[in-house]
Amino acid sequence: MHGFQDVVERHSELAQHVLVAWLEVSAECRAVTTLLHRTPIIDRFLDHLLKAGAIERNPITTLREACNIKQCMPVWPVLASRNPEKALAELRRPQPFGSVQAAVMSEHVTLMRNRGYKYTSQSARLLRFDHFLELNPALQDRPTEVMLEHWAAAKATRNHAAECETLRRILTKIFRHRDPSIRPRRPDPRP
Image (tube, rainbow, N blue to C red; front, side, top):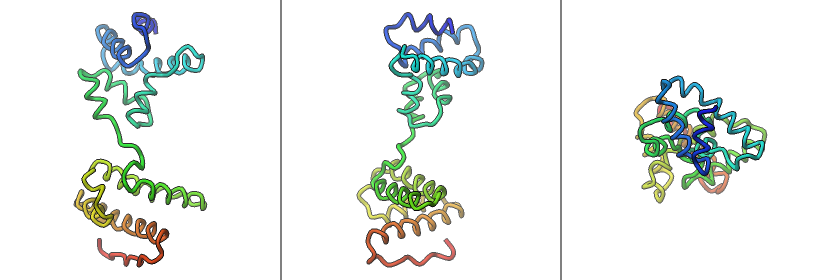
């Protein structure tokens, strides 16, 4: 804690570069594994300072939210790496329901949950498809069936083929709910 405080006092604001500087200074006298084992202490200290009003924002939480990850622990090894900016770019995850079909899918998940269903496995399938669409922006202007064909071709496993068939049924249900003139899709018995 004292070493962290010494590094922070040398800088004007508490930001990412201060955390990297502390990790570099601490790495001179400690093993990286020991250092990373002690980072939760700094996390709790920064959370305490935030609650006390001593700082405006916790830089680790800010980085975690920017990378769209749930925990702070993966951020520390990235900051301790040789090139933190590049490692942070690799750590970033796409926003949930941020693709072209996002509004339709998230609205359907919300509708089903409001009806009383847990709707966890279906929403996870929709989210995986959404991440695929975000990582493939060339598919944005294509019809949904073409998107699904590319999604099915992404992996050659039997489980993925079955998941694609389930996703097709879910999406047909979503679009049929919006437009009843769409014919129901016959399930493929052997995807």
